[in-house]
Image 1 (spheres, rainbow, N blue to C red):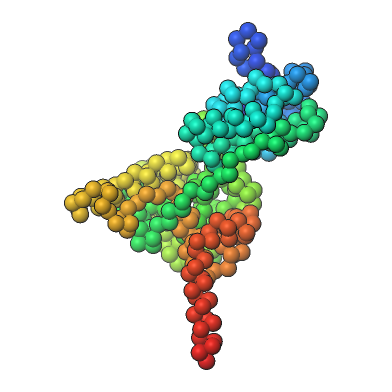
Image 2: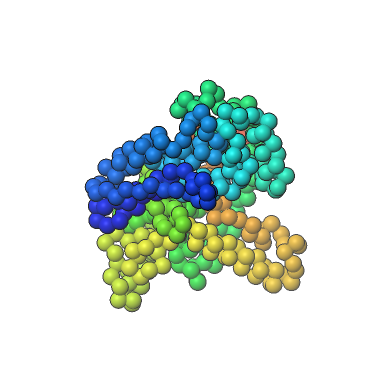
Length: 392
């Protein structure tokens, strides 16, 4: 199912309606409606229900048919963001359907599921990736139980590999400062992005969706309420990962970064003869600020910057990358600036709940579990406090 604005107040609804028995190509049923987006979504849900009721025989449904129905259902009710739905479809078509798609759902057994998991591990997928495939298949099977297709989800008896958290690489304050300084000369958009990411710990989609209306430079506050994702070349703005907005305080450094960015955008707009948009994006390559930078663009530019700094370190020291010190290496991803923000605050003694709220974590326990490695610094500080008490 997809839906897109066809014109002012007009929506084209498309619903997956099975596969052609001769060519095995997907069949879609479409309908055009007029009205608001919420009204269009209601019509979309009706269309999905109507198509599903006559396409699939629950008593003979295959795993592939269930997955198609489940994705259409998730998309129709707006339960997942467009990027998430796109990833569901990509993973289903790439791995799950070729291995399990033709099996009748009522014949699906845990041993066949476990065999699929082992096959994907043997093909080089990480345990974390296979766990994601399990979560997709399990969610679809649980929905099948709700629909009355099966009495119990066959994935309940399957054994998904335990996800392994990748080793967290956190840049030092000196490395963060060098990254920002290096970007300032050639890429002011990236420099602003890196500074804000390190100071606020925001996610890259949240960063790209920021507009100037989200900032209060007088009070030193910034509001994260949206996230930008790119699906098949099209931008989609939706809620944050936790579907909750949050206000984050900025100190003098953060306010200064944004003031410089605003001055730069005004100057660029005047030089280019392109007036700023009514509510411009903070991160934009356009002189008018009307189009946001894409999350993947930031990621690629950050990676290139890290490679550049390591290459410069090799040349200046006359050695190869294998002999560089940790301080000279930049094996980071853009998301590691978020890790930098969290671990720095925890190590400095900021309480976990405040850190969790500032970074948009759904629960403080997740923050504690994910960043437990930063706690030894607080433990040493606590030991010093107790030592001083007993010394008195």
